[in-house]
Length: 533
Image (tube, rainbow, N blue to C red):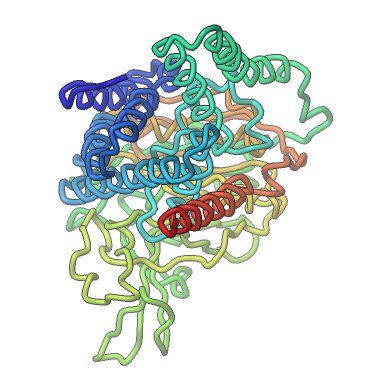
């Protein structure tokens, strides 16, 4: 094979388009993801044969991944143009550098098996991308299957990294098959075609045959939940001057009272449904809390889980989110919180742990405090918010696992809530920032992955939609329309089975990181030894 420069750029373009149109709701032609990396593998092969430097590959892969990022997540610009540009530039950069690192490893090892190092290297990148300040795992390869739940019932063992590995394995087999045809290597192409077929179809067959025999809620208790979608415009209403918590809560309760009855156990409201910040320790003395109590008295035994913007005060600096008030000689921290109010007992808070970079958290501001001045304002507070140090649940009966917006992308985070005996999962979110775009649809579909990984029903309350219910197989049982007031009730089973993934979390990411480091170390040693000869 011998590609011209124009042909190499065409391969780059093809890869970017294939990945884009196979992602959920930017094409949703999922099978194309299994050939999305093939053009890039041909690019790498061609440049290695010509002994061209990694700079050429970097430019061409950057184009591919930039197209992928732009087409699939352009809607981020509806929330923040600057934030979107930073996400596009840096996420593309990380993807390109990861592929270039694979190219150097493959070139340095000079072995037929070196192409398989793409798997641990790429998964290492995805795992790292879940666990640092610039975290943006939206485009994790395993997320492609959020709309093909019948293909991935085995996520209860692997999580999304299993899906990423599956995609890369099939892409490599397809590349080897096409290369053997191109180079006319006898009947070798038959073996690679067989490998392609087995690697592609086996996981689907396991999933399809596995699904009918699974049973989780024989004899389980059922729990009745009311989900409220108040549809308050986050740009023009929710955080507007002159609005009050009482006004927005009254709108919320009017909807809730239209569906809540004597059978209701829990009422769920969306992220920042109480939008005007308040000091947590003073909640019970605030006027809107009296409104909450008066309305809840109408419900019988039903309790309330709702999102709120909250503040805590400290005598000393508590974390990098602490802001000093010189006049009062105290520090305060702002939070994106979930608030649980029982019929009997004290209200309690859990703060959001996984923050949106640039909006709720300024990356690396603990090292460079001046970066806080670059905070993007998206209504409410800006700058770095305070967080919980680890996933928490409300110790109610049953235990409640609140998942606030962005946290629902993090499988390991959710699994750690399930390990604390959460019998179902609740996602509270506000996706109105993105407008009527693929963003809210993608976010909605990702809840199906958390359901499968943990075999838990997921209840989702979104301020502007879509709200809904997913069963433990990731199937949508109830779904509201976007940008409209809505409220409904649904009975769900309380499940106790703990999956392999719930127990072990992102173990595939950890193993890949170890293997990736080992492969890179071997490559460095081999290259250094070859230079001494």
